[in-house]
Image (cartoon, rainbow, N blue to C red):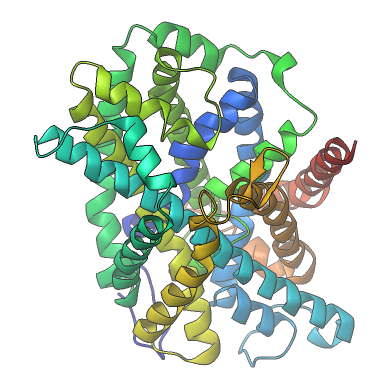
Length: 471
């Protein structure tokens, strides 16, 4: 059950955790971002790179964030305060807080702040894109029921040229998630995902079936499955890693918060494996839905505009397209809600635990501030269209900096806390809580991969990306 403000919340059921974690993981990142990033990087080759990154890097990091939350019984920022000795705890999380220098303590605190700022920036960016999805959902639905005639290019033009409309849609989306998160865990987030995720799964299944019935399905599957490694660039590994962290909600502190709500008997390695597997499956299914549509439409449109230019045009021209479009954008909006709620829950939990602010007031304050920040990406296509570097506008820069750079760097900080500062005897016990007995070997493998495989790979990928950028 959930809790009051002075008692730590707990997931009501194990299913509630899985639905919330998976809902937070496979948001717009899987359904909107993955297809166009994969298309930009040659399709099948990037899919293989993404899947390898998901299990070799994403899964260990996901387990690490869940561990930090469960062991500290706190969200990321208060957990960091506990680790550096600025908050009293019953059980020490580190060998000795006094062994940390003043510079180290200040660095940990600053990086925890960086994670929260990153969360806020991504949520504001996410809310704007969710508003776009809501706009197309409404326009296609009105066309389907005959109230108006749906015109894809016109709908996009109206949206892009009207900053106030984007702000209104963004605010509406933030109000919806604010109302849900403002309630306690059991009656807010957990109840909502219990209703929405089964509907999402059903809609996604129907979308896959419809896409596979299109004439372009066979060619799309070849593009998705057949790897053409010549299409990969030197920055592709960093893009894959950044996308893995984005879709698995790693680096935002979300999984730390969700881990803090877990019961003592929860077995984290299995929980992490299930979430990572489901997230990867959803990404591949998203590709199966989208790539047949890409091949039917204007293949020159690759990038963030893919969903909002090529796809709506096809819905307006194909047989049964409006019904398909309603299901498509409803599925997309449910996914965006799940991820947005996870991001907002993280910010609210950190504020509530650190400053003892009631949940409802925290939700109102965070969503209000997020709307102010969202003014920048919301106005990027009209009033702020002059802000660009080369051909990349403000929204594209927002995406590139946050997802491809900031997210992996913040995730490295969290992993460093888990792998090097947490008392490893506490961590190892979380790998031994299996029904079949001890799993010390699993713990040693996880720790080795985190310290000497995943972390160096991220550093190398970021270095290659930097080299490509400045060369």
